[in-house]
Amino acid sequence: MTRPRTMILLLTAALAGSTTAAMAGPPAGHPLAGGFVDAHLARMTEQLSLSDSQQAEIRAILDEQHQQCDRERQAMRERIDAVLTPEQIALRDQALAQRMERRLDRMAERLDLSAAQRDEMSALLQEKRANPQITRSEMRERIAAILTDEQRAQLRDGRRGGPGHPGPRF
Image (cartoon, rainbow, N blue to C red; front, side, top):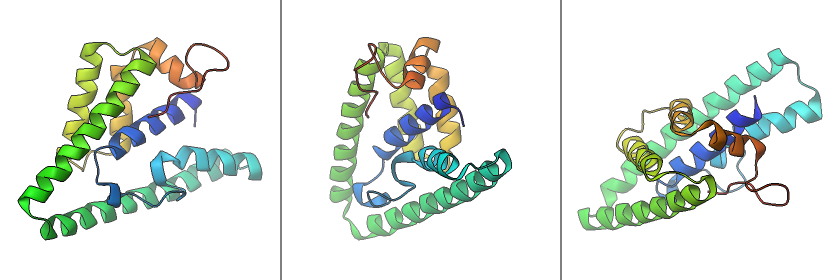
């Protein structure tokens, strides 16, 4: 997995995570939480000197587990929604929307997103929220398509403004 793809995956996971209920994600530290499939695979590859075929097989396993977690989160969300009142659902959705806006603002600042790019990202995240069937890889590709070459390079390099500056955190 290339570094740009890793960063885009992390970006996608962070943004997609902002659109789900706080209770609905894997617990902190879970190897699949926050889009760490690539990081987990990279660590395994480095530590175990995995071949390309092993990486592909392990990626398939991790991706399937990740999809299973997504399905379980969606099922849990539906069960929770069945318990909440319409007013409580509206309050939760409002809080999620505010959190998404804050994350988009931070991303816009760190990657120097234009207003149009920010609007496209916002629309994409709202679409994901309305249609949980959109896959993470599709989200990753669609986010990459919104970014310029320079912005993708910033993600690939993991920093903004040169050495000593932390990479994007969403």
